[in-house]
Image 1: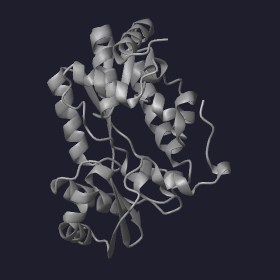
Image 2: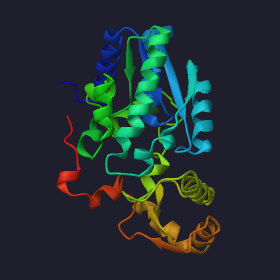
Image 3: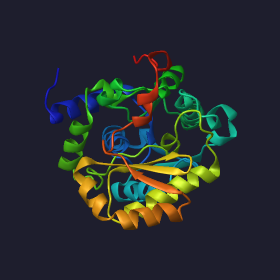
Image 4: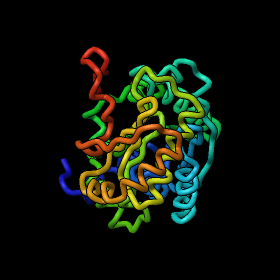
Length: 276
């Protein structure tokens, strides 16, 4: 098995070559960008990057994804998804991501068929095997492939290769859909998504990079990357003002800092799904 990031990237390219043609689920994040770039390098016009837009992603992320695709010369197509039309998604159960990904992958599969592309690929990587990710069940149902994962590439590998290739977003902070900011069981609405989105945009403008605003009713619980916690504390007056202006009555900074999927910590074993 390959051990270095460069060797894993070679394996990724070989995997893509064997696929023949592929639609890449592209978000503008570091994972899907590397996958789209590699697919374009290996398959040329036999690949297409598809960007899904919805209320669950901030417009700033969509615009950044468009810019990155343009800079890298990717063939880009956009589709709209409507997760909030599904009452099961709005109810925010522990398998919420399954309903979101089912809509997304079903739509991408339709686009792939219409374009004569054999496969749909997502940017899941080897690190994603260790968390509660019900969206993987939807991926299996729609025969979505995960070439980065197949090549054994973890997030650090992907960042190193992206940097070597000169990709502009190699160090872009990780991003997840805004629905992940709400405790399971709290209804997801357009207004609440907009509130969290506005809050995070304001904090980004203050200079914070890797963080999440978790919404607990009237309380905004701010998780900040440990390296940025001192900065956030020094900015606490501005942070509090920004979150109050977004509509939160109370503001708290989480002493454990940012960690991906922190709201999964409240799930019992029976609520988490086994990962293949």
